[in-house]
Length: 554
View 1 (cartoon, helix red, strand yellow):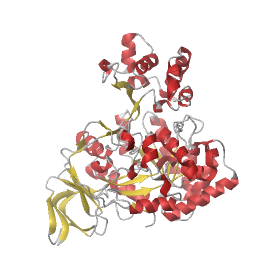
View 2 (cartoon, one colour; view 1 turned 30 degrees about the horizontal axis):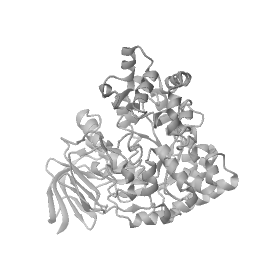
View 3 (spheres, one colour; view 1 turned 120 degrees about the horizontal axis):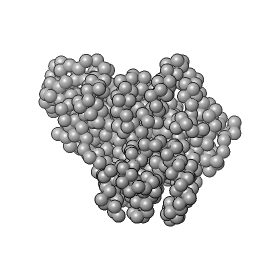
View 4 (cartoon, one colour; view 1 turned 180 degrees about the vertical axis):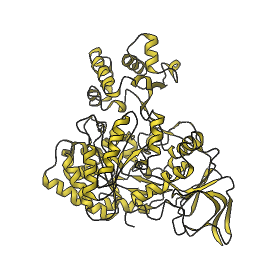
Protein backbone atom coordinates (compact mmCIF):
# COMPACT_ATOMS: atom_id res chain seq x y z
CA UNK A 1 0.00 0.00 0.00
CA UNK A 2 1.48 3.32 -1.16
CA UNK A 3 0.44 6.85 -0.22
CA UNK A 4 -0.34 7.82 -3.83
CA UNK A 5 -0.53 5.99 -7.13
CA UNK A 6 -0.90 7.91 -10.40
CA UNK A 7 -2.42 5.54 -12.96
CA UNK A 8 -2.16 5.34 -16.73
CA UNK A 9 -0.40 8.61 -17.45
CA UNK A 10 2.06 9.48 -20.18
CA UNK A 11 5.31 9.59 -18.26
CA UNK A 12 7.96 12.06 -19.45
CA UNK A 13 10.74 11.48 -16.94
CA UNK A 14 12.87 14.62 -17.44
CA UNK A 15 15.88 12.85 -18.95
CA UNK A 16 14.95 13.54 -22.57
CA UNK A 17 14.22 9.85 -23.17
CA UNK A 18 11.01 8.93 -25.05
CA UNK A 19 7.72 9.10 -23.19
CA UNK A 20 5.91 5.95 -22.15
CA UNK A 21 2.58 5.03 -20.62
CA UNK A 22 2.60 3.73 -17.08
CA UNK A 23 1.88 4.21 -13.39
CA UNK A 24 3.85 6.00 -10.69
CA UNK A 25 3.84 5.37 -6.93
CA UNK A 26 4.74 7.82 -4.16
CA UNK A 27 5.53 6.86 -0.57
CA UNK A 28 7.26 8.66 2.29
CA UNK A 29 8.07 11.65 0.11
CA UNK A 30 9.83 9.66 -2.60
CA UNK A 31 9.08 8.13 -5.96
CA UNK A 32 9.11 4.38 -5.29
CA UNK A 33 7.98 2.91 -8.61
CA UNK A 34 7.74 4.13 -12.21
CA UNK A 35 6.10 2.20 -15.04
CA UNK A 36 4.65 -0.88 -13.36
CA UNK A 37 3.32 -0.49 -9.81
CA UNK A 38 2.79 -3.64 -7.80
CA UNK A 39 0.30 -2.46 -5.21
CA UNK A 40 -2.40 0.10 -4.53
CA UNK A 41 -2.43 3.66 -3.27
CA UNK A 42 -4.32 5.07 -0.35
CA UNK A 43 -5.11 7.82 -2.84
CA UNK A 44 -5.20 7.03 -6.56
CA UNK A 45 -5.39 9.40 -9.50
CA UNK A 46 -6.48 8.50 -13.02
CA UNK A 47 -3.98 10.23 -15.33
CA UNK A 48 -5.38 8.94 -18.62
CA UNK A 49 -4.75 11.59 -21.31
CA UNK A 50 -2.45 13.44 -18.92
CA UNK A 51 1.33 13.92 -18.79
CA UNK A 52 3.18 12.98 -15.62
CA UNK A 53 6.46 14.91 -15.30
CA UNK A 54 9.05 15.95 -12.70
CA UNK A 55 8.30 19.21 -10.93
CA UNK A 56 9.73 22.19 -12.78
CA UNK A 57 12.84 24.02 -11.53
CA UNK A 58 13.07 27.81 -11.94
CA UNK A 59 16.72 28.74 -11.59
CA UNK A 60 16.32 32.53 -11.95
CA UNK A 61 14.02 34.02 -9.32
CA UNK A 62 14.12 36.86 -6.81
CA UNK A 63 11.79 35.44 -4.18
CA UNK A 64 14.27 36.42 -1.43
CA UNK A 65 11.84 38.87 0.18
CA UNK A 66 8.47 37.51 -0.97
CA UNK A 67 9.00 34.16 0.75
CA UNK A 68 8.63 35.98 4.09
CA UNK A 69 5.07 37.15 3.34
CA UNK A 70 3.91 34.61 0.74
CA UNK A 71 4.73 31.04 1.70
CA UNK A 72 3.18 29.79 -1.56
CA UNK A 73 5.71 31.68 -3.72
CA UNK A 74 2.95 32.49 -6.17
CA UNK A 75 2.52 32.59 -9.05
CA UNK A 76 5.39 30.13 -9.70
CA UNK A 77 3.68 27.47 -7.60
CA UNK A 78 0.60 27.68 -9.83
CA UNK A 79 2.60 26.76 -12.95
CA UNK A 80 4.12 23.43 -11.93
CA UNK A 81 7.30 24.86 -10.39
CA UNK A 82 8.38 22.86 -7.34
CA UNK A 83 11.91 24.26 -6.82
CA UNK A 84 13.22 27.82 -7.15
CA UNK A 85 16.67 29.38 -6.87
CA UNK A 86 16.83 32.90 -5.42
CA UNK A 87 19.71 35.32 -4.84
CA UNK A 88 20.34 35.87 -8.55
CA UNK A 89 22.19 38.79 -10.16
CA UNK A 90 24.19 39.43 -6.99
CA UNK A 91 21.20 40.42 -4.86
CA UNK A 92 19.99 38.80 -1.66
CA UNK A 93 19.05 39.49 1.93
CA UNK A 94 22.03 38.15 3.86
CA UNK A 95 24.44 38.75 5.33
CA UNK A 96 23.42 42.27 6.30
CA UNK A 97 24.40 44.58 9.17
CA UNK A 98 21.67 46.50 10.99
CA UNK A 99 23.04 49.84 9.76
CA UNK A 100 22.65 48.67 6.13
CA UNK A 101 18.97 47.64 6.22
CA UNK A 102 17.80 50.85 4.51
CA UNK A 103 20.55 50.65 1.88
CA UNK A 104 19.63 47.06 1.11
CA UNK A 105 15.96 47.97 0.73
CA UNK A 106 16.79 50.86 -1.59
CA UNK A 107 19.04 48.68 -3.76
CA UNK A 108 16.39 45.94 -4.08
CA UNK A 109 13.65 48.50 -4.75
CA UNK A 110 15.69 50.27 -7.41
CA UNK A 111 17.20 47.23 -9.12
CA UNK A 112 14.49 44.59 -8.81
CA UNK A 113 11.43 46.82 -8.67
CA UNK A 114 10.41 45.50 -5.25
CA UNK A 115 8.03 47.70 -3.28
CA UNK A 116 10.04 49.71 -0.76
CA UNK A 117 7.46 49.61 2.02
CA UNK A 118 6.85 45.89 1.53
CA UNK A 119 10.60 45.32 1.93
CA UNK A 120 10.79 47.43 5.06
CA UNK A 121 7.85 45.84 6.88
CA UNK A 122 7.70 42.38 5.29
CA UNK A 123 11.27 41.16 5.86
CA UNK A 124 12.20 40.28 9.48
CA UNK A 125 15.41 42.30 9.33
CA UNK A 126 15.96 42.32 13.09
CA UNK A 127 16.02 38.52 13.41
CA UNK A 128 19.30 37.80 11.62
CA UNK A 129 22.61 39.23 10.48
CA UNK A 130 24.68 36.35 9.13
CA UNK A 131 23.98 34.17 6.12
CA UNK A 132 23.84 31.13 8.38
CA UNK A 133 21.17 32.74 10.58
CA UNK A 134 19.18 33.66 7.45
CA UNK A 135 19.31 30.08 6.14
CA UNK A 136 18.22 28.76 9.53
CA UNK A 137 15.11 30.95 9.33
CA UNK A 138 14.29 29.57 5.89
CA UNK A 139 14.97 26.05 7.11
CA UNK A 140 12.30 26.45 9.78
CA UNK A 141 9.80 28.29 7.58
CA UNK A 142 6.63 26.87 6.06
CA UNK A 143 7.18 27.06 2.29
CA UNK A 144 5.19 25.50 -0.52
CA UNK A 145 8.25 25.10 -2.77
CA UNK A 146 11.83 23.98 -2.35
CA UNK A 147 14.21 26.93 -2.21
CA UNK A 148 17.93 27.20 -2.93
CA UNK A 149 19.86 30.43 -2.32
CA UNK A 150 22.87 31.90 -4.13
CA UNK A 151 25.44 34.07 -2.34
CA UNK A 152 25.12 37.55 -3.85
CA UNK A 153 28.09 39.76 -4.73
CA UNK A 154 26.27 43.01 -3.95
CA UNK A 155 25.25 41.65 -0.54
CA UNK A 156 28.78 40.47 0.25
CA UNK A 157 30.34 43.76 -0.89
CA UNK A 158 27.97 45.88 1.20
CA UNK A 159 28.65 43.72 4.28
CA UNK A 160 32.42 44.08 3.94
CA UNK A 161 32.74 47.68 2.66
CA UNK A 162 29.66 49.43 4.00
CA UNK A 163 28.37 52.47 2.11
CA UNK A 164 31.64 52.73 0.15
CA UNK A 165 30.67 49.52 -1.68
CA UNK A 166 28.66 51.74 -4.04
CA UNK A 167 31.45 54.27 -4.54
CA UNK A 168 34.86 52.70 -5.21
CA UNK A 169 37.01 49.70 -6.04
CA UNK A 170 37.92 47.37 -3.18
CA UNK A 171 41.38 47.13 -1.67
CA UNK A 172 43.25 43.83 -1.69
CA UNK A 173 42.42 43.39 2.00
CA UNK A 174 38.70 43.92 1.29
CA UNK A 175 38.71 41.49 -1.62
CA UNK A 176 40.32 38.91 0.62
CA UNK A 177 37.66 39.54 3.27
CA UNK A 178 34.94 39.08 0.63
CA UNK A 179 36.56 35.84 -0.52
CA UNK A 180 36.64 34.53 3.05
CA UNK A 181 32.99 35.47 3.55
CA UNK A 182 31.93 33.82 0.29
CA UNK A 183 33.83 30.66 1.22
CA UNK A 184 31.94 30.52 4.52
CA UNK A 185 28.58 31.05 2.76
CA UNK A 186 29.32 28.18 0.40
CA UNK A 187 30.19 25.97 3.38
CA UNK A 188 26.91 26.97 5.04
CA UNK A 189 24.85 25.84 2.07
CA UNK A 190 24.76 28.54 -0.61
CA UNK A 191 24.09 26.90 -3.98
CA UNK A 192 26.67 29.14 -5.60
CA UNK A 193 27.60 32.76 -6.25
CA UNK A 194 25.98 35.50 -8.35
CA UNK A 195 27.03 38.92 -9.63
CA UNK A 196 25.88 41.64 -12.04
CA UNK A 197 27.34 44.20 -14.45
CA UNK A 198 23.99 45.40 -15.78
CA UNK A 199 23.87 49.18 -16.23
CA UNK A 200 20.18 49.33 -15.31
CA UNK A 201 20.91 47.85 -11.88
CA UNK A 202 20.76 51.05 -9.84
CA UNK A 203 19.55 51.90 -6.34
CA UNK A 204 16.67 54.32 -5.89
CA UNK A 205 19.10 57.23 -5.70
CA UNK A 206 20.53 56.39 -9.13
CA UNK A 207 23.85 54.94 -7.94
CA UNK A 208 25.07 51.66 -9.40
CA UNK A 209 24.55 48.53 -7.34
CA UNK A 210 27.77 47.58 -5.47
CA UNK A 211 28.79 44.71 -7.78
CA UNK A 212 28.89 47.06 -10.78
CA UNK A 213 31.39 49.34 -9.04
CA UNK A 214 33.74 46.38 -8.53
CA UNK A 215 36.69 45.80 -10.83
CA UNK A 216 36.43 42.75 -13.08
CA UNK A 217 39.42 41.23 -11.30
CA UNK A 218 37.38 41.21 -8.08
CA UNK A 219 34.67 39.08 -9.67
CA UNK A 220 37.24 36.65 -11.07
CA UNK A 221 38.97 36.42 -7.68
CA UNK A 222 35.72 35.66 -5.87
CA UNK A 223 34.87 32.92 -8.35
CA UNK A 224 38.26 31.31 -7.72
CA UNK A 225 36.99 30.55 -4.20
CA UNK A 226 35.19 27.52 -5.64
CA UNK A 227 38.59 25.91 -6.24
CA UNK A 228 38.32 22.16 -5.90
CA UNK A 229 35.06 22.16 -3.94
CA UNK A 230 33.36 20.08 -6.62
CA UNK A 231 29.99 21.76 -6.18
CA UNK A 232 28.23 25.07 -6.68
CA UNK A 233 27.24 27.14 -9.68
CA UNK A 234 28.09 30.71 -10.75
CA UNK A 235 25.33 32.98 -12.07
CA UNK A 236 26.18 36.25 -13.78
CA UNK A 237 24.32 39.17 -15.31
CA UNK A 238 27.00 40.51 -17.66
CA UNK A 239 25.10 43.57 -18.86
CA UNK A 240 24.66 45.04 -22.30
CA UNK A 241 27.65 44.05 -24.48
CA UNK A 242 27.75 47.58 -25.92
CA UNK A 243 28.57 49.22 -22.57
CA UNK A 244 31.98 49.79 -20.98
CA UNK A 245 31.00 48.17 -17.68
CA UNK A 246 29.80 44.89 -19.23
CA UNK A 247 31.42 41.58 -18.36
CA UNK A 248 32.99 40.34 -21.62
CA UNK A 249 32.28 36.79 -22.70
CA UNK A 250 36.02 36.12 -22.65
CA UNK A 251 35.99 36.90 -18.91
CA UNK A 252 32.97 34.66 -18.37
CA UNK A 253 34.91 31.81 -20.01
CA UNK A 254 37.94 32.63 -17.83
CA UNK A 255 35.73 32.43 -14.73
CA UNK A 256 34.46 29.00 -15.81
CA UNK A 257 38.03 27.78 -16.37
CA UNK A 258 39.46 29.15 -13.10
CA UNK A 259 36.54 28.11 -10.89
CA UNK A 260 36.03 24.66 -12.37
CA UNK A 261 32.29 25.15 -11.95
CA UNK A 262 29.39 25.63 -14.37
CA UNK A 263 28.70 29.27 -15.18
CA UNK A 264 25.28 30.45 -16.33
CA UNK A 265 24.48 34.02 -17.31
CA UNK A 266 21.37 36.06 -17.96
CA UNK A 267 20.51 36.38 -20.63
CA UNK A 268 21.11 35.57 -24.30
CA UNK A 269 18.16 37.37 -25.88
CA UNK A 270 17.17 38.20 -29.43
CA UNK A 271 17.30 41.91 -30.13
CA UNK A 272 19.87 42.51 -27.41
CA UNK A 273 22.23 40.01 -29.09
CA UNK A 274 22.05 39.91 -32.93
CA UNK A 275 22.28 36.51 -34.63
CA UNK A 276 25.97 36.83 -35.51
CA UNK A 277 26.94 37.85 -31.97
CA UNK A 278 24.94 34.98 -30.45
CA UNK A 279 26.74 32.52 -32.73
CA UNK A 280 30.13 34.04 -31.85
CA UNK A 281 29.42 33.77 -28.10
CA UNK A 282 28.34 30.14 -28.33
CA UNK A 283 31.45 29.31 -30.37
CA UNK A 284 33.66 30.96 -27.73
CA UNK A 285 31.91 28.89 -25.05
CA UNK A 286 32.58 25.71 -27.03
CA UNK A 287 36.27 26.53 -27.20
CA UNK A 288 36.82 27.32 -23.52
CA UNK A 289 37.93 24.71 -20.99
CA UNK A 290 34.97 25.41 -18.67
CA UNK A 291 31.24 24.93 -19.03
CA UNK A 292 29.16 28.02 -19.78
CA UNK A 293 25.38 28.01 -20.22
CA UNK A 294 23.73 31.28 -21.32
CA UNK A 295 20.19 31.58 -20.03
CA UNK A 296 17.43 32.01 -22.58
CA UNK A 297 13.73 32.78 -22.41
CA UNK A 298 10.64 31.52 -24.16
CA UNK A 299 8.64 34.75 -23.84
CA UNK A 300 9.12 38.30 -25.10
CA UNK A 301 10.67 40.45 -22.35
CA UNK A 302 7.83 42.94 -21.92
CA UNK A 303 7.95 45.49 -19.13
CA UNK A 304 5.32 47.89 -17.93
CA UNK A 305 7.08 51.19 -17.31
CA UNK A 306 5.90 54.55 -15.97
CA UNK A 307 7.68 57.87 -16.11
CA UNK A 308 7.43 57.95 -12.31
CA UNK A 309 9.54 54.76 -12.21
CA UNK A 310 11.37 54.63 -15.56
CA UNK A 311 13.21 51.32 -15.02
CA UNK A 312 13.30 50.48 -18.74
CA UNK A 313 15.30 53.68 -19.32
CA UNK A 314 17.83 53.21 -16.51
CA UNK A 315 20.67 52.66 -18.98
CA UNK A 316 19.90 55.87 -20.90
CA UNK A 317 22.38 58.59 -19.76
CA UNK A 318 19.80 61.39 -19.81
CA UNK A 319 17.58 59.44 -17.42
CA UNK A 320 20.30 59.41 -14.78
CA UNK A 321 19.15 62.95 -13.96
CA UNK A 322 15.59 61.62 -13.55
CA UNK A 323 16.59 58.71 -11.34
CA UNK A 324 18.73 60.91 -9.09
CA UNK A 325 15.88 63.43 -8.63
CA UNK A 326 13.22 62.80 -5.96
CA UNK A 327 9.86 61.83 -7.53
CA UNK A 328 8.30 65.25 -6.80
CA UNK A 329 10.89 66.97 -9.01
CA UNK A 330 10.71 64.67 -12.04
CA UNK A 331 7.81 66.42 -13.75
CA UNK A 332 9.93 69.52 -14.35
CA UNK A 333 12.64 67.45 -16.03
CA UNK A 334 10.17 65.78 -18.40
CA UNK A 335 8.64 69.15 -19.27
CA UNK A 336 12.02 70.60 -20.32
CA UNK A 337 12.27 70.65 -24.18
CA UNK A 338 16.09 70.69 -24.10
CA UNK A 339 16.23 67.58 -21.91
CA UNK A 340 13.68 65.83 -24.14
CA UNK A 341 15.71 66.47 -27.26
CA UNK A 342 18.82 64.89 -25.74
CA UNK A 343 16.90 61.98 -24.20
CA UNK A 344 15.05 61.19 -27.44
CA UNK A 345 18.33 60.87 -29.38
CA UNK A 346 19.84 58.64 -26.70
CA UNK A 347 16.82 56.33 -26.54
CA UNK A 348 16.92 55.77 -30.29
CA UNK A 349 20.70 55.24 -30.25
CA UNK A 350 20.68 52.75 -27.37
CA UNK A 351 17.29 51.07 -27.71
CA UNK A 352 17.12 51.05 -31.52
CA UNK A 353 15.04 52.80 -34.13
CA UNK A 354 12.21 50.28 -33.73
CA UNK A 355 11.83 50.90 -29.99
CA UNK A 356 8.64 52.94 -30.37
CA UNK A 357 7.07 50.24 -32.53
CA UNK A 358 7.41 47.92 -29.50
CA UNK A 359 5.71 50.28 -27.04
CA UNK A 360 1.96 50.63 -26.39
CA UNK A 361 -0.21 52.33 -23.76
CA UNK A 362 -1.54 49.65 -21.40
CA UNK A 363 -3.10 51.66 -18.55
CA UNK A 364 -4.11 55.33 -18.58
CA UNK A 365 -6.67 57.53 -16.82
CA UNK A 366 -6.29 60.63 -18.98
CA UNK A 367 -6.05 58.77 -22.31
CA UNK A 368 -8.30 55.72 -22.03
CA UNK A 369 -8.77 55.86 -25.81
CA UNK A 370 -5.13 54.91 -26.32
CA UNK A 371 -5.14 51.79 -24.09
CA UNK A 372 -4.23 48.66 -26.06
CA UNK A 373 -4.31 50.71 -29.22
CA UNK A 374 -1.65 51.41 -31.86
CA UNK A 375 2.03 51.54 -30.98
CA UNK A 376 3.62 54.80 -29.88
CA UNK A 377 5.34 54.87 -33.29
CA UNK A 378 2.01 54.58 -35.13
CA UNK A 379 0.36 57.19 -32.91
CA UNK A 380 3.27 59.58 -33.46
CA UNK A 381 2.96 59.16 -37.22
CA UNK A 382 -0.79 59.81 -37.07
CA UNK A 383 -0.25 62.96 -35.03
CA UNK A 384 2.90 64.08 -36.87
CA UNK A 385 4.74 64.18 -33.56
CA UNK A 386 8.04 62.88 -32.21
CA UNK A 387 7.36 59.54 -30.44
CA UNK A 388 9.41 60.49 -27.37
CA UNK A 389 7.47 63.74 -26.99
CA UNK A 390 4.22 61.81 -27.40
CA UNK A 391 5.15 59.34 -24.65
CA UNK A 392 6.16 62.13 -22.27
CA UNK A 393 3.02 64.20 -22.89
CA UNK A 394 0.76 61.19 -22.31
CA UNK A 395 2.66 60.47 -19.11
CA UNK A 396 2.47 64.08 -17.89
CA UNK A 397 -1.29 64.05 -18.37
CA UNK A 398 -1.47 61.06 -16.00
CA UNK A 399 0.85 62.59 -13.38
CA UNK A 400 3.58 60.25 -14.70
CA UNK A 401 1.50 57.13 -13.88
CA UNK A 402 0.63 55.99 -17.41
CA UNK A 403 1.69 52.35 -17.77
CA UNK A 404 3.47 51.83 -21.08
CA UNK A 405 4.11 48.25 -22.17
CA UNK A 406 7.35 47.79 -24.09
CA UNK A 407 9.09 44.70 -25.45
CA UNK A 408 12.74 45.14 -24.52
CA UNK A 409 14.04 41.91 -26.10
CA UNK A 410 13.07 38.46 -27.41
CA UNK A 411 10.72 39.74 -30.09
CA UNK A 412 12.19 37.41 -32.75
CA UNK A 413 10.30 34.11 -32.49
CA UNK A 414 12.53 32.30 -34.97
CA UNK A 415 15.64 33.25 -33.01
CA UNK A 416 14.03 32.20 -29.73
CA UNK A 417 13.08 28.85 -31.23
CA UNK A 418 16.63 28.22 -32.45
CA UNK A 419 18.01 28.85 -28.96
CA UNK A 420 15.38 26.63 -27.33
CA UNK A 421 16.70 23.79 -29.48
CA UNK A 422 20.35 24.56 -28.64
CA UNK A 423 21.45 22.42 -25.67
CA UNK A 424 24.34 24.80 -24.97
CA UNK A 425 21.75 27.17 -23.47
CA UNK A 426 19.46 26.75 -20.46
CA UNK A 427 15.98 28.07 -19.79
CA UNK A 428 15.73 30.79 -17.15
CA UNK A 429 15.13 34.53 -16.58
CA UNK A 430 11.60 34.36 -15.14
CA UNK A 431 12.69 37.03 -12.61
CA UNK A 432 9.78 35.81 -10.45
CA UNK A 433 9.56 37.85 -7.26
CA UNK A 434 11.06 40.96 -8.89
CA UNK A 435 9.50 43.80 -10.90
CA UNK A 436 6.15 42.66 -9.49
CA UNK A 437 4.13 45.59 -10.83
CA UNK A 438 6.04 45.72 -14.13
CA UNK A 439 5.98 42.17 -15.52
CA UNK A 440 5.10 38.56 -14.69
CA UNK A 441 7.06 35.84 -16.49
CA UNK A 442 6.62 33.17 -13.81
CA UNK A 443 4.23 31.53 -16.27
CA UNK A 444 7.05 30.52 -18.63
CA UNK A 445 6.64 26.73 -17.98
CA UNK A 446 3.03 26.74 -19.15
CA UNK A 447 3.97 29.07 -22.02
CA UNK A 448 6.72 26.66 -23.11
CA UNK A 449 4.39 23.62 -23.02
CA UNK A 450 1.41 25.36 -24.55
CA UNK A 451 2.94 27.65 -27.15
CA UNK A 452 6.26 26.09 -28.11
CA UNK A 453 5.25 22.42 -27.83
CA UNK A 454 1.55 22.19 -28.67
CA UNK A 455 0.94 25.23 -30.87
CA UNK A 456 4.23 25.63 -32.76
CA UNK A 457 5.71 22.13 -32.46
CA UNK A 458 9.21 23.59 -32.12
CA UNK A 459 10.00 21.37 -29.13
CA UNK A 460 8.86 17.87 -28.29
CA UNK A 461 7.38 17.18 -24.87
CA UNK A 462 10.56 15.32 -23.98
CA UNK A 463 12.77 18.29 -24.90
CA UNK A 464 10.57 20.78 -23.04
CA UNK A 465 10.35 18.74 -19.84
CA UNK A 466 14.14 18.22 -19.88
CA UNK A 467 14.52 22.00 -20.20
CA UNK A 468 12.23 22.48 -17.18
CA UNK A 469 13.59 19.77 -14.90
CA UNK A 470 16.48 17.46 -15.79
CA UNK A 471 18.83 20.06 -17.25
CA UNK A 472 18.60 22.67 -14.45
CA UNK A 473 18.85 19.98 -11.77
CA UNK A 474 22.06 18.65 -13.31
CA UNK A 475 23.74 22.02 -13.89
CA UNK A 476 22.81 23.42 -10.46
CA UNK A 477 23.63 20.18 -8.64
CA UNK A 478 20.13 19.84 -7.17
CA UNK A 479 20.35 16.37 -5.70
CA UNK A 480 17.68 13.71 -6.29
CA UNK A 481 15.34 16.01 -8.18
CA UNK A 482 14.58 16.76 -11.81
CA UNK A 483 13.94 13.15 -12.89
CA UNK A 484 11.19 10.59 -12.27
CA UNK A 485 13.16 7.64 -10.92
CA UNK A 486 12.71 5.41 -7.87
CA UNK A 487 14.43 6.97 -4.87
CA UNK A 488 14.10 10.56 -6.09
CA UNK A 489 12.14 13.16 -4.13
CA UNK A 490 8.52 13.11 -5.26
CA UNK A 491 8.30 16.53 -6.94
CA UNK A 492 5.71 15.84 -9.64
CA UNK A 493 3.34 17.73 -11.93
CA UNK A 494 0.39 16.23 -13.83
CA UNK A 495 -1.04 18.30 -16.69
CA UNK A 496 -3.31 18.12 -19.72
CA UNK A 497 -1.15 18.57 -22.85
CA UNK A 498 -4.23 19.53 -24.86
CA UNK A 499 -5.04 22.59 -22.77
CA UNK A 500 -1.95 23.60 -20.80
CA UNK A 501 -1.47 27.35 -21.02
CA UNK A 502 -1.92 30.43 -18.88
CA UNK A 503 -4.50 33.13 -18.37
CA UNK A 504 -4.21 36.91 -18.76
CA UNK A 505 -2.22 39.30 -16.62
CA UNK A 506 -4.08 40.36 -13.49
CA UNK A 507 -3.16 43.18 -11.11
CA UNK A 508 -3.69 42.36 -7.43
CA UNK A 509 -2.90 44.35 -4.28
CA UNK A 510 -1.67 41.74 -1.82
CA UNK A 511 1.81 42.91 -0.79
CA UNK A 512 2.58 44.14 2.73
CA UNK A 513 1.27 47.69 2.92
CA UNK A 514 -1.25 47.01 0.12
CA UNK A 515 1.10 47.48 -2.83
CA UNK A 516 0.18 45.84 -6.13
CA UNK A 517 1.75 43.23 -8.41
CA UNK A 518 0.96 41.37 -11.62
CA UNK A 519 0.04 37.66 -11.55
CA UNK A 520 -0.93 35.03 -14.12
CA UNK A 521 -2.90 31.85 -13.40
CA UNK A 522 -2.21 28.52 -15.05
CA UNK A 523 -4.56 26.47 -17.22
CA UNK A 524 -4.46 22.69 -17.57
CA UNK A 525 -2.38 21.75 -14.51
CA UNK A 526 -4.35 19.13 -12.58
CA UNK A 527 -2.04 18.11 -9.74
CA UNK A 528 1.30 18.93 -8.13
CA UNK A 529 3.31 17.14 -5.46
CA UNK A 530 6.24 18.66 -3.56
CA UNK A 531 8.30 16.18 -1.53
CA UNK A 532 5.45 13.70 -1.81
CA UNK A 533 2.79 16.09 -0.47
CA UNK A 534 0.00 17.08 -2.84
CA UNK A 535 -0.20 20.87 -3.16
CA UNK A 536 -2.61 21.05 -6.11
CA UNK A 537 -5.63 18.81 -6.53
CA UNK A 538 -8.27 19.03 -9.24
CA UNK A 539 -6.64 22.16 -10.59
CA UNK A 540 -6.91 23.98 -7.24
CA UNK A 541 -4.00 24.92 -4.96
CA UNK A 542 -4.09 23.70 -1.36
CA UNK A 543 -2.67 25.34 1.77
CA UNK A 544 0.05 22.78 2.32
CA UNK A 545 3.71 23.72 2.80
CA UNK A 546 6.09 20.78 2.29
CA UNK A 547 8.90 22.80 0.67
CA UNK A 548 12.44 22.61 1.98
CA UNK A 549 15.53 24.76 2.03
CA UNK A 550 18.04 23.12 -0.30
CA UNK A 551 21.60 23.50 0.93
CA UNK A 552 24.37 22.74 -1.53
CA UNK A 553 26.03 19.45 -0.72
CA UNK A 554 23.09 18.36 1.43
